[in-house]
Amino acid sequence: MEFNINEILKIIPHRYPMLLIDRITHFEEDFVVGEKCVTINEGFFQGHFPDHPIMPGVLIVESMAQVGGFLLLKKVKDPKDKVVYFLKMDRIKFRKPVMPGDTIRSELKLLKYREGLCVMDGKVYVGNTLVAEGELTAKVMKK
Image (tube, rainbow, N blue to C red; front, top):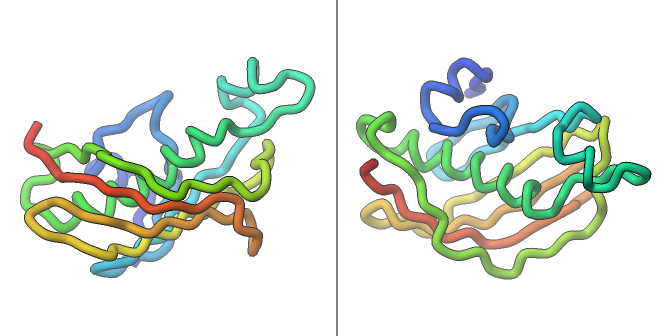
């Protein structure tokens, strides 16, 4: 199952400039794949770095977290009344830089889920190249 940007906006609370997902390309009960097209027009490239633009690692992780948050919010009733708080990020590794023109693909697998608390394994790719990975712990909370 796929979701376009309009469908994503109905589920997650993020908006410009913090919305870092353009589409969900694959969705299952415990697995999700989402993409973000990285353009030179992103505001963070003005300062990171003007003569050598690379996407900040923290925003790569945020994009991955938002894709995981979409998966979690699709599991609960009334997602508009909920928010996902990320509690912990473990074993985050950056393998390659992400540049303007790249499309990052975040793949998250739900490892544990109980009463809104979850652990997910995440991987971020550009094409077939792994650029970042880590384990995310989050909780779905009422707003």
